Length: 72
Image 1 (cartoon, helix red, strand yellow):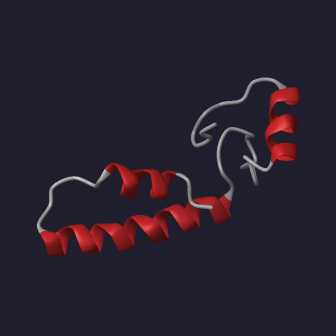
Image 2 (cartoon, rainbow, N blue to C red):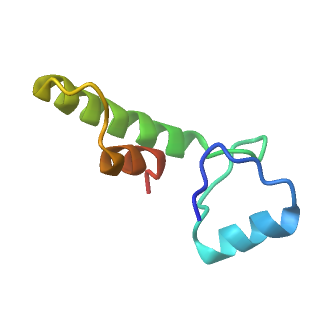
Image 3 (cartoon, rainbow, N blue to C red):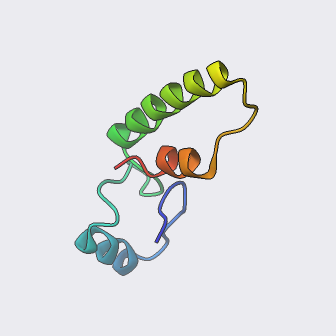
């Protein structure tokens, strides 16, 4: 299950995600990753963006994009 910028409206869904380990943290609104998750995403974005610019490729690969949005 993917979790990034997806609003979880039910408490039991959030609890199940936390217990299963698929969700490691929430922001204060309960609708996205916390500050640590955003820092990891930004760090990976910068790394892949630098590599992408060196290769002169316009878009990220699917693997790069998935790695950015799932930072853990």
